[in-house]
Each structure stands twice: as structure tokens, then as C-alpha cells.
Length: 189
Image (cartoon, rainbow, N blue to C red; front, side):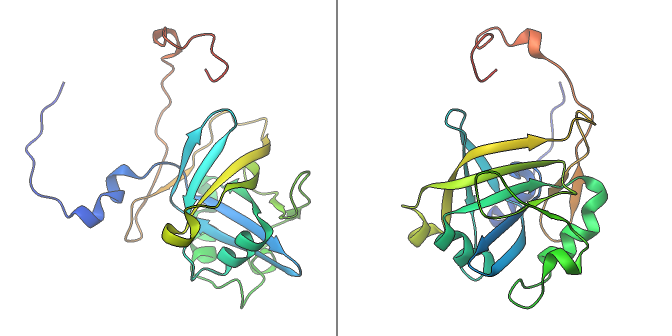
């Protein structure tokens, strides 16, 4: 194993290292408004029920759509969509129809009113499970109520955001399933 020479690092930049998962596109709908927002921070909170936590800034157009509708779709784009992901993040949903502007295809969801994004590798239909931290932290806790994933490829390259306009993509996958002896056979393994 390696050892490292280290120096102080700005605390406010910790997300550049700890970034938890792939960039996602969150689609939402309420009454006649539909939007897509780029999200770089979300976390799995529980396996069953499948809970996802995320922060949505109150200044974001999607905030009110999701808060009022109590639902959304978390869509997982692949690395080839990087330019679209950035453009979506740089535009305001109250000013532009992002599906039309970025040539994305809305697909009706099965369990929520927000549309799925056809061009994304996976789509997770979500309903608000807990709203207690929205007022103080803008923190939403969703339950995934329906999930679909592309048949192939098995492990596409996804985007990961490190702040200040820097992205990375997934590296090679390593299968260490045989080493996971403690949880083998559990429903979440």
C-alpha cells in the first residue's frame, strides 16, 4: 500500500473528494410546469425501502415543483451526455423548456407524474418519504417506488462532479463479491 505526503486542504472543497455518486438529472412536474435539473449530490440512505436523500437549493425552479408535487424522477445520464448535463445545469427551467431545448425525450412514468428521460441509462421514480429537513436544510428524502435500467451496457460510464467545472467518469469495475462473506444471501446484496 502507498503512503502519501499531505498538506492542508480547504474544508469547503471536501466535496471534490467525497462526491458520493454519479451526476443525475432530476425531472419534475407540477400542474403545467415540467423541469429538469442537474444534481451532483445525493446519497443512498436505506435499501428497503429504497431511500435516497438529496439537497435541492430553494432558488432552483425544481424546488417548488418537487415540494408541491412530492415526487420526481432521478435519471442517470451517461458520460456521452456531459455537454447536455452542463447545459441543463446552466439554464433556468422557468425560462426554457429543457426537454425541447436539449432534444430530450419525456416518457410517462408509471407511478409519478414527472416524466422519465428516455436518453438516460436508468430512471428512478420517487415519492417524497420525509419532509422534515426541507425547511431547515433543503434536504429531501425520497423513496424509490419504481426503477428501470437499460439492459446493456451493464456498467456504462457515468459522470461524477468534483466542483469548479471538473468531472470524472467511472473507472474499471472490480468484482469482489466472493469476499463479501458477512452479507452474502441478504436481500440487499
